[in-house]
Image 1 (cartoon, one colour):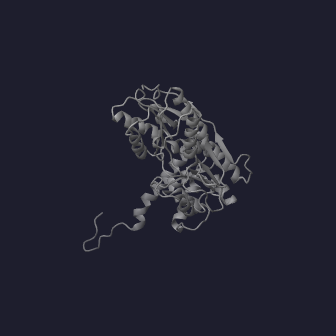
Image 2: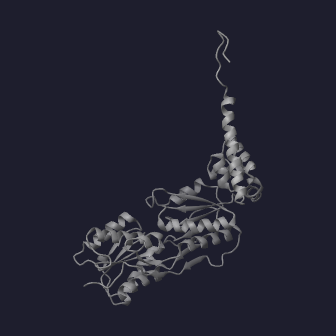
Image 3: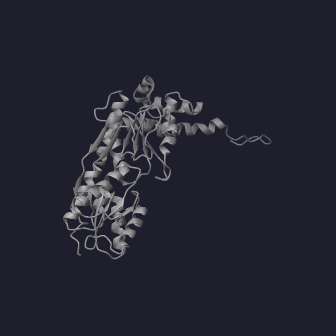
Length: 370
């Protein structure tokens, strides 16, 4: 219909513009609810966050009435939670108990080891009805103590935190904490790790049994207990075999790919290079294989290599990597069991859990040619 001559032409008002978007949002929330019903699971805090277009932390604060969420945002979150039926399940219990139902997982960097650990944590937490909030420094291990700063930001958002390969000994606060692959310091935290010392001895005994006497070692992160134990196992096996320890054969890899490549190159540049290398983790071992191959060396013909972890990449490497397997997903399972006990105010039967390791022989080791 045309406007009368001389009459101003008015555009649509704000409410008429917003109305279609509200309809779309309501449809999206109802669609999410249908999906939840079809798969026969109760809605989670993650579902509410996705439907409301906010973070999990914002949902937690809004539902629990905590500071830091604007009134309009809080109202939207509560409306979405109601439409999804969240308030009748996890949200209601959170409000009754003053808990968020969220466990934080602090990981310095997402790499193969921490990814496998996260799988174990995720499954165990999912079975418990709790939600997981993963938090990373994003810059890897460059900023010591990042967990302390992050924990202060998440105050009131998480009920407890699992620290994976932490850069700190301990953290102040009132929430339960559990460490996986703990720091070297004398912390009072409950911990879960694997038998790094025994696993390193298995790797070294395998290489020594093949006839290797000059064995290099690419070490791990020196602030982690796992790295110190693996180096101690390396030295212990040499001593048992009557092989003198040579400090030139130990180079720092820090559990990182780039530094491990540098370490492997330094070992192969020695006037009397090793015939075998034990990497403190699979990344360092795979880096060693790559450096050797780039120099025209055959693995295992010219150089034998053993890793530690047995991440999925180890079996897919070329050639497949001989390594020491630690049960990474079980590390996550055990840490969650500890966390749930602490949240229930139960005394831990074993505050420090060490899981067994075993050697997995593949195709990167052979007797030395010389």
